[in-house]
Image 1 (cartoon, helix red, strand yellow):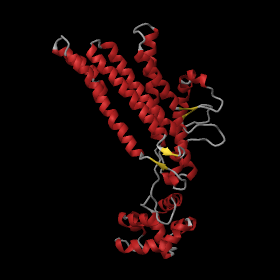
Image 2 (cartoon, helix red, strand yellow):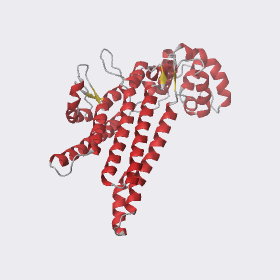
Image 3 (tube, one colour):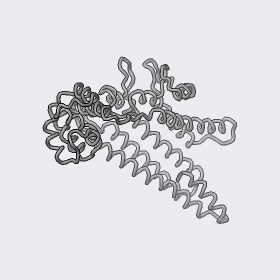
Image 4 (spheres, one colour):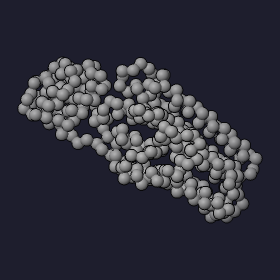
Length: 352
């Protein structure tokens, strides 16, 4: 937010009219920017190598903009500072970020792949190539979670229609990739893209930022899906791990390893429950999660960064543990070393 605030404020302080982009930006700037401009400019300009006439230096000098950024934040709200950032970013001629196109295709691929793999597993079961086990049930639940978090249901969508969610997904993918969104069912990330994913925060309207975090569509009953996406992600990840552990339980029959596997299942369940509760109650009140960004609403939140880092660290450790478990059993098998290495390599694909 600091990079381009300075040029608008110093222009306000000097009342420059030499460059129409800055004049127009100053005219549209919030009152706080003009009010703070003199004080901020007097403080920042002598500590930078820029002169008052060198707008290029004022736009790009990190020392000047860092000082101005700290100064203006004391006198402007977050919304006002973002407005100033948008105006001066344009006045300085900096390009705006727009990665919606690449985000659309990246997310589209991440939606297609689970559908393909799930279809292969269902086909294998349908043709009686492999029996259905607990690992298949849990991975199916994980697939439902994955699909559910990628779909925005219309207000009249009933719970029993969840069974049909995967089928609209196949139809929606082509519409999603082409950028269309006028559908009764919409991909969650298509909605998030429309609210600013892939763009600079300062080019968005304040309501768009709130809607991005909350994803509550006006005049409808859409739930706070961005808030809920993290819930589905945590549950989805735990179900995938549970599926792998159930596979190990079907493959390995020694009581010692089975005790360890069941213990890991219990730990995975406790971990999932803990982080689901943290994700729901990380802010008090809960709606502060999507309203608190502007600094205008009362409330407090736990550090999202700390929660995310803890979740990542523990899950990476659990992943490593789950990769090691089958290797210890394969190593004990009475088979040639070459075959042991081959089987270990197969179970180690998860490293990728």
